[in-house]
Image (cartoon, rainbow, N blue to C red):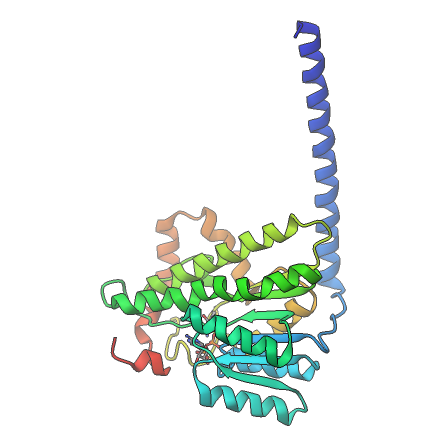
Length: 322
Ligand SMILES: NC(=O)c1ccc[n+]([C@@H]2O[C@H](COP(=O)([O-])OP(=O)(O)OC[C@H]3O[C@@H](n4cnc5c(N)ncnc54)[C@H](O)[C@@H]3O)[C@@H](O)[C@H]2O)c1
């Protein structure tokens, strides 16, 4: 290649770069403007009537509330939980509202059970079009207090189950180019909190899983499979019973209804990410640039450094001997 042709091709590639950059800036501007408009004028809610919605961990807490919300909107429900009695109660509440629910016992920490329950669900109601991976556990113990079994169980439920369940239902969503995958993670999947290393790391892992899946889906032309990553701060469902910071008025815990209202809003407006309360966006951002020593001081000021020590085990698995 001559010097002239080398200079010409360098000129062409910098022109192409500038053009790409201009297109990118234009697209970014469009997204920022659309986002600001959506804050002021929220998008219309999409209809979920007739969709087949699977919720894991539907027996208690947010799983049950989401089931009732979807039932109200005329979705057909598939409810999974290992707590058979509580799950049956959720199913009965759905039916009292005039909804339909296929209630099934499934321990999502067991890959083979997931496969069998997925088959039963398909046979009973058809393919899942909205998947809410909600089941989660916490032991609230430090690294040396946790048993090996508890560490593994946390990852099986909070992280690995998401892989196995998505692998069951994503193929049909891809075939029809229709579906919505919702991941219940946590703010401690974005930045960690003391006293629950297994929980924090399992939630960080599931945030990574969800985000990677999101980007994979963006690579499909005209992708119409939506995803929503949900990261709540402490919610008063009983999962973290007793846990509280020193100045709760500064960072108040969420009620289950408040949290589920925000989750439903995000799902029904196809938002890819929601953290709540809103203050958590600021904390998440600060965690990326505040020196760790400064973050430690803030945790101490808020009492977040020792909040987990007030934890009172409550759920059956938390009361079991390790
Ligand atoms: N409560 C909070 O403060 C909080 C905060 C952030 C994120 N989250 C996350 O939100 C989700 C729901 O939390 P919640 O507060 O409603 O909890 P919860 O304890 O009230 O309900 C969780 C449900 O999951 C079920 N479950 C547990 N292990 C299971 C298994 N192996 N197989 C099937 N079902 C199983 C339980 O039986 C229960 O019905 C969880 O993923 C949790 O980690 C909760």
